[in-house]
Length: 361
Image 1 (cartoon, rainbow, N blue to C red):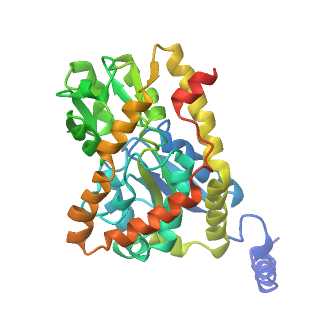
Image 2: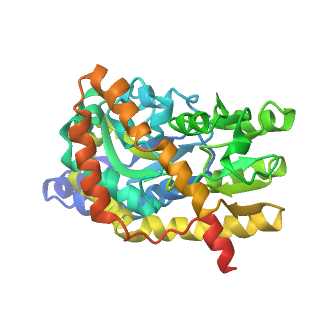
């Protein structure tokens, strides 16, 4: 076909709307950067990988993802600003690294108030939907679209040497993350803030006696048990709410059909896929941990009750007084919404703690 005839034919097809129906021409492919400060084997990464792999599949490749794991695009503590300002398109945010920037979200960070990690995920979703200042913090202040709430499953107390009671923690140097520092200090330990990637070497050098606020899956994936094989369940409930977000600019530029795919995937996570993914990962990592010398133990019920009474409600009251009040947040009102959500979801979770999984093996 001569060039002039080809151009005429192409113009006719376009005029008839036929080109828009041809595969690969209906929508230009969108390439997005997902940026995470942890490795692809860390706890929430199992959820993130499922979500974005499914997003690629269900958009028939019209959305393609490029992954930057373990701080390879932005360093720890830079991800919130990066997604807000467009350096990355989507990212995992752990609020404990952004205590000044996320005062409302910190009202979701506590221990000893719930039993199951999949229940905590639903509580976070419900509070986000029902407490406007939380939505405004993400959507307006940080220009981010919340794709879904997630968390770091369960965080055992990981120690080089075993303990029989929480009194044994007095004077011990324990890596702590976010509000985990409150917990360690309330037991007489010395809380040492430290990024996840630095923990192994700190344990190896004896800088740390142990780790708290490091979820089970990530702890085993990062091989912390090679130095600190004693994993203690202290009855603290699920660990560390987190959230996977997309730049609002990127979200607003997606076709409505692609936005709906994201919404559908999030709803699947909330409806049970989150627990399904994590249950398998936890089971696999419990078996791996036991095979590699980890000792999984639980404190006595008496010690757990003592721990809970030590931490709560003091931890929540501290947030209300020192964070919510100075930032103009009605802390009491938010915690009423939290309590309603906890009551609604209590007893519905299916995610077992590692010590429970080990007991069934």
